[in-house]
Length: 174
Image 1 (spheres, rainbow, N blue to C red):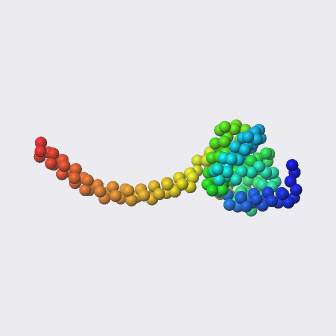
Image 2: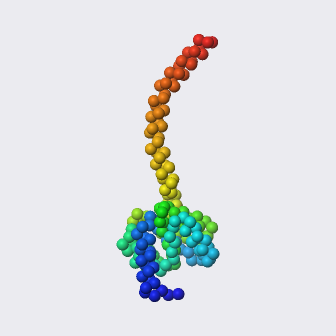
Image 3: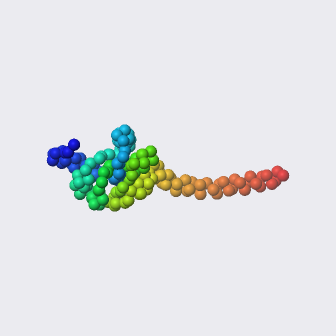
């Protein structure tokens, strides 16, 4: 069903709003997926904080004009599905990568992060990015490591002295 001008403007405005606040974009070819597969993909996208949209490429090109994703405008050809990560930069990559394992018709075409455009093969790199919780855990671990090492260094002289005294005591007892 064709969209009238007002509907097209609404789609462009909605996509522009999402693109302005999104962390990453994955565009994938979806030709050959069944309706039930697309429904399942949309459900998983909602659960993972990913905005998923099938829209005309010209509308998407207009929507991303003044965003970091303007670099992909010349690559938008053919039937594409657009996944924008709203909360976690790697969420869209993980969604497309995981779903493509079960649906071989879903093929990532391009990835965009931070104003840079990458080929669809970089979806693996995007999917390997840590979640917010994982990144915070790594940061806490890195911050705690120097304190742990300092405590070990400060405790070592006392431990060495105790080992020497113990060895001398065992030698005299023997």
